Amino acid sequence: MHAYFLRAGTETQPIIFRVERDFDGKSFANRRVTASQNGATILTLAASFQRPEAGLEHAVAMPDLPPPEELRSLDILAGDYAGISAQAVAFLSKPSAFDIRPCGVPAFLQTKPGTPVSHVWIRFRGSVPTDPVVRRGVLAYLSDYALLSASLIPHGVNMFEHSMQTASLDHAMWFHDDVPLDDWLLYTSESAWSGHGRGIARGVFHSRDGRAIAHVTQEGLIRMRPDLAPRTTIPHMP
Image (tube, rainbow, N blue to C red; front, side, top):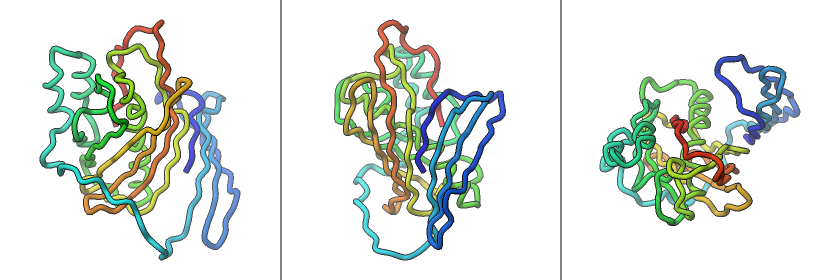
């Protein structure tokens, strides 16, 4: 799927989805989706579907990293930032549908320039959906996490200490396998380029046993705004 985020939406108004059936073949089908709210288009999306089939398989190996049992959840990490950043503590302590355990300093809290790569272990809390389509939807929702901040790491910039305007612009995702939400997933994201107020990041989800579950690519807005005060609202937590 490939989505473009055109305008901000709101949870207080209904969203109308219009689906165009562009193609239905023997193996593939394609759809175009337009989401509108209050008479304005807020998102456009193109999606391709394939019937399951066997084929040649290969994938880049999953990074060798500490297992999630050896790492701390974000809410526990909040104690490390007490007295340093009230906004960071509030964000880390915010209730989440996922248990998120970063390998090292979270990308959105980096304060020194570094290699633009982020690794986090993630596990769904609560009852796992049985419908594989719903599980893919949950992963699509989760995939927006930790992508945009990867493009900030080389600059030593984080969303709590600097005056920035950030947003997801477009988002592409390829699903390779059923999503095992009942176990830990490793989400690796890296940024190959930034410039002109934008950053490109790509990510991959691996199951605990090393299978590549999905790949993600996103272009995001990372505009420095000296005219704005540092962020006082809490960023989105999945």
